[in-house]
Image (cartoon, rainbow, N blue to C red):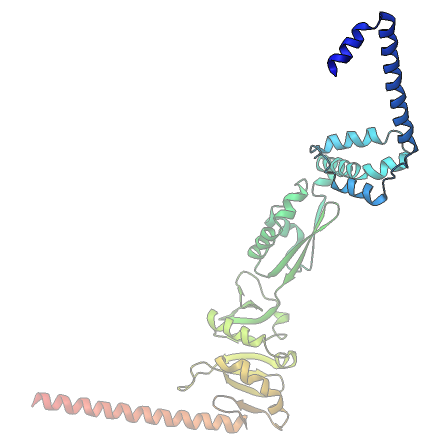
Length: 350
């Protein structure tokens, strides 16, 4: 069959061959146009919202390279060139705030406000502001931050330098003024040693270098013949008592017995005398107020073993009788010892 077509084409004239090729090309273009018309007549496929969403969700965005803060700032400037100034400032305010803070900090460091302007004290009665400032080594012109960092150290320096100072709180009053709030120990009692008096503070510390004002001797108790350890022990107990009990006390002396070596006698302003072991003073002396209400004449309130009250004359007679008894007992013991020694010596000589 193919051979026959070839033989037939060979028999065609050149004009016939050209016409046949033209007809073939025309038929091909007609077929192409028919296909195009059929395609255009078909309904157009509409992509649904769901398909679009899925297509977007499935698509993985390319990872953006990390930008520096300066690069982001420049990008923000370029992207906002055509926007209103208010919108630009709304996005740029964090950068502006950081810049302003840095500028203010730098200005403060180099300004006079960063140096100490003044140093004052409150609550100090016995030490002057000048003395306290000298103990802290604070000087106007020092940097504020230096003092702020060393507040605890400065407070310790003040309390160590002045025994009367219980605490010192350093506070900054902006921009550059400092105040030291001083709390002092109160004067608890006086200690009499010979003809001199010393002040004992409420923590038991004795002030040996201060001169006592004689006018104050009637205001608080005076201890006679106590050592430093006993003073601290007395003050510790004394500070636990109520103000009305403390106000009654005048002079305190030591009256040891064979049974109680730390026995003390406290003279009271109401005319009574209280005798109590120093080691039990804090526990027993609060009962004095109740006992005193039932006393009708000046008495001695004895708290050595229990608690009982006896008129001073009767109590003194009892003490004298006991002293005589002790003397006789001591003399008898001495005579017995002498007799024993004499007998022993006689036996040795024989």
